[in-house]
Length: 296
Length: 334
Ligand SMILES: Nc1ncnc2c1ncn2[C@@H]1O[C@H](COP(=O)(O)OP(=O)(O)OP(=O)(O)O)[C@@H](O)[C@H]1O
Ligand SMILES: [Mg+2]
Image (cartoon, rainbow over all chains, first blue to last red; front, side, top):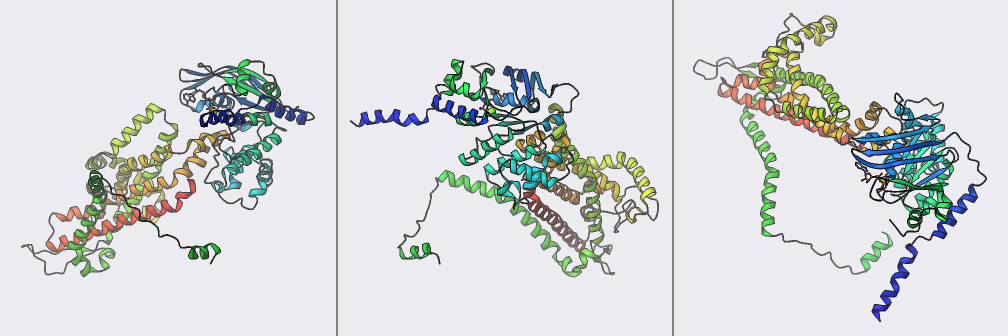
């Protein structure tokens, strides 16, 4: 009797955790409908072609080509260790900071390969901003100074710093929460606020592309929602590329989704398509298995 | 009184239980041993300072505050070793001046070099070069000071004199670079140079250690914002390492103040307060003590003990200052 009840309970308990493909597809589709009237003709986006990335002799990413159009959000999904972070870090030349790291392939921004020899890498990183998994404001700086840190670091000239600061904080959805405490240290904010501060910070240097590596994985649902709203706003003026483990999030925020998988070897691009297709009718069985939660 | 507090009083709360833990016997023994170890340095330091104070107390009492302000150290001894007819007078003022001046010269020259070296080692040096240089720096820290002294006397002296002459020639209008007579040999400046070289390893080691701990996510954040390496170091590494570097510099300062042999070898030890740092005369407390100790009368020994006590207090003060600075600025980068 007792045995039976336990056996009966189990499937019921695990049911809500299982991701329903249809519901995700609905989310993605509704996002698409909302977006429909927004034109996507901004700049030229970022074009990654045949990217390979190594750590020493270990090949972590193999032959990935994705075009990230301006005015769109692209989600990178895939199981842990499939090379999402590695790939995204080749897009703004952060990969090369790791000793022994190497890459091959081309990344075009405004028609120019960012790996061309003789290029000033610091200028590239101004155009391709990055938000990290863990919020990392500069603790020695105030909230306001943090927003303008990029201006100071790259020695840029701006006509009106205060205006820029307010603009960036507003776009990051943080202005109303911090406008009276701009002089307090950046570390005095909550985790979610700190992450939005980091987003504001990367906006200040006016990038064309924003890379986000699991920006919400350390945050509560409320902050996550705020950041997703922010991403929606940002995509109006730039290409946003977001790594996420949260399928719901990918479906909610992205226009396109890239599914990566490593299958024991290097990470590869399995499928790249509009998000509603990835979640609605994926072409590859492996994609379907992953987005329906039957795998990884 | 809040409602909760009133309620707490009405409710009959149980008294908190006494939490105890009886550690195993072996655990208690081990605890005793490490506790002893932990307090050893404090104990020894306390005993030494008490000893110095005890032995030097009579000199301190006779001379009073003048012991540290007077520029006079006269010990008259009869041929039989007893106290002379002319009264002796002991004041370490001049040597205190010398101690502080040579140590500050050392710090002003040594610390910038050490900090640049630390930045190079932490952020620029290729891995192999770094490993090699780090062990060189460690070796240098363990180098006997007499060797620094001999090298300073025989090798560095000539270059030092050349620099001193230039300083005197072009910056001679600044009081400290004046000399009444052109004797540049064995000056506090050159002693300071040798001390600078001696403190470079410790300041480098401490600073490098701190810089190497700069959180990676902050470094990456700076780079991702288009920072050059130098901009990253300025905005991330230096604010983070600031307090540690100050602490390291203070350690170096303390070491320079207490240094005996190198100063004794290089400096022309003369009992005078020499503010003309390029002039070849002067001394510091430690070298003064070692110079006088061999042939001191019993009275003078007491005065030397007192001088040792003053040196102890000075280094203590420097370390407290370091703590203070570190504590005050520590939060900035953390
Ligand atoms: N610094 C490194 N040195 C060596 N190998 C690394 C390094 N960083 C990552 N790798 C390897 O490269 C592969 C891809 O790692 P990556 O961090 O890109 O995965 P990911 O998709 O971002 O995973 P997660 O979702 O867990 O963040 C993994 O097999 C990992 O072990
Ligand atoms: Mg990752």
